[in-house]
Length: 253
Image (cartoon, rainbow, N blue to C red; front, side):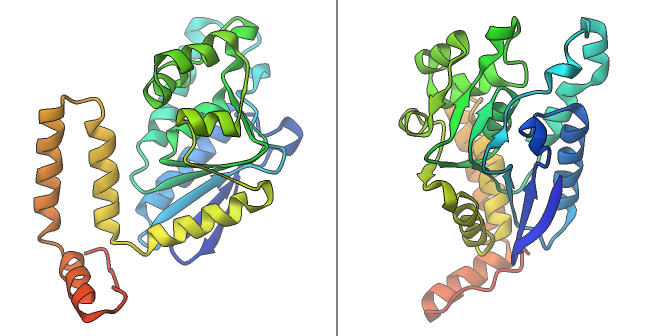
């Protein structure tokens, strides 16, 4: 994993297993979770971009770690808990996807809030081709992202879809030329980083938590979050800047 400051407020994380097409072994997942937890505690980081390389975002789980594993050993590895740590990241997380995002790589992209895909990117859950299923959240997140019939096509055939197809079904946020994926994602992250950070984090928290609630319960959660934000210094700064015709200087307070 390579971590670097991409611009003010933006951390860029690169998966760095090029010979394995960034296949997600347990060590890589743990390292990613640790980096995200560190970024969550760093007030200078307001958004994170996660990427791979030009060939692959992540081409799946590392099957060598699963070749002979039994159910008890798999449970003891705690892979599900690592996924939970990644999902718990409270700040904006953007996936910049070039090449393959398959299996665990597709699931990792779905853990992100925004997915920017290169025109040549491919997304899929090929687990059924090797006798397993998408066990990193794929069967559940994909259904919620694209609906039953598109999800079942991907999950049961195991065949990948193109970036254009993924865009049409709502699996990605935007498709850009391959050589612009990371730059576009960093620019977008920088724009988000300039917004009021408490408001951005509250928006993510409410949107993610509310998606599995009933509508009345989710609306109550939204209203209470709005009431809390009304007490922030950033709210006052944002309103003052609006009426004064200047760019706001948000401090996250």
